[in-house]
Amino acid sequence: MSENFRMINATEELVAFCDLAQANGWLALDTEFVRTRTLYADLGLVQARTGAEIVLVDPLNGVDLAPLWQLLRSDIIAVLHAAGEDLEIFQRNNAAPQNLFDTQVANAFITDGSQIGYAGLVEQMLHVSLDKSQSRTDWLQRPLSPAQLEYAAADVEYLAELYPSLRAKTVAAGMEELVLAECQEQVAKRARESVAELAWRDIGGVNLLTGQGRAVLRELAAWRLTLAREKNIALPFVARDHVLTDIARKLPNNRQALSVIDELHPKSLRLYGEAMLACVEKGLAAPEEQHPEEIPRYDQDPEYKRFFKAAKALLKAAGEKANVPVPLMGSRKQINEVYVWQHFTRDETKEKLYQPDLYQGWRGALVAEQIAELVAKSYS
Image 1 (cartoon, one colour):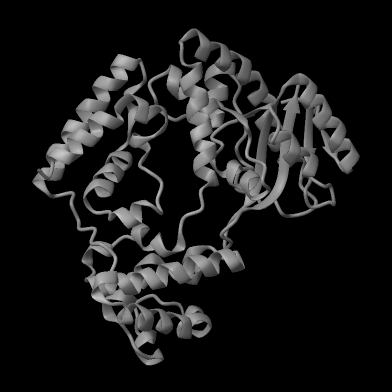
Image 2: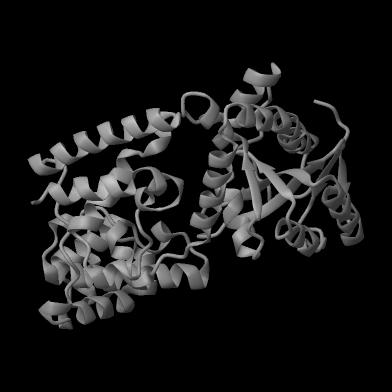
């Protein structure tokens, strides 16, 4: 690892770097952040490279990052590795990359579809072993240590070296179009903000609740997500999932009854007890026709098992025909999304949700029609 990087300490320096990147047409980019008790990540450092220029931008020292956000919104190619959480930070600054090239995604398409970490890919392609000892350090502390700065700079130094080789390999393999499509789907996914009133659908244990219990859980989950967004609190620090399902099952109607809910933290009881009880009351008042739909446990259902087996075979055949690594065609989760969408999701709910991955994008173009026919047959 060279020490050929510099700190950007003034906004005009960042403007000059962004102008250079714009002229080059691409930049390698990474972020360091902390997310412990917050819903949203706290940005601690931005690393970037274009050409031979490596810079570290400290967002806590007064540098205005607006020029970088504007650059990402342009037609520049943003090169990242496993960009998911970085994209969340960009999205919150209205800076979704228009042209993302994710080296993890690219490598998956030109190999066997498996996901590899940055250090592993650098070692595999460049024969360089990276020091990952700083990955869990506090990126909000100041001053940052020399070891932290060197670690951060390495994340974009070698990323920039991986990019041209991986880009060429995707072209040679006829995969460039699919790789870029998958990258843009990842950008689009991170831009989605889930509907608070449907947050109950993502909570485990919902299959054990009655219609009345689901109505209560709907109110609790919507309240928790709304509060977490307003206060920037990680969901478990408001209340854990199983606490919400326990409340929806036991239906406490006073603070004493609420206080004996298993693992409800005393602080949460003190701060949010009245709000939780109000959610119970509102859920109980919902008429039966307004109860959320049932999502039963289906993994032991013979019909589901037959569908899943057939869906896996269909995806395998489609992947082989399109020369796409089979693991990238669809995961168990993505197959299950289709099953729940088709059998346990009302039309009015579908209008508020995004379609399953297998029904849209490049995957949908390959398999949507066949998957829809298959899942329809499973309950016929």
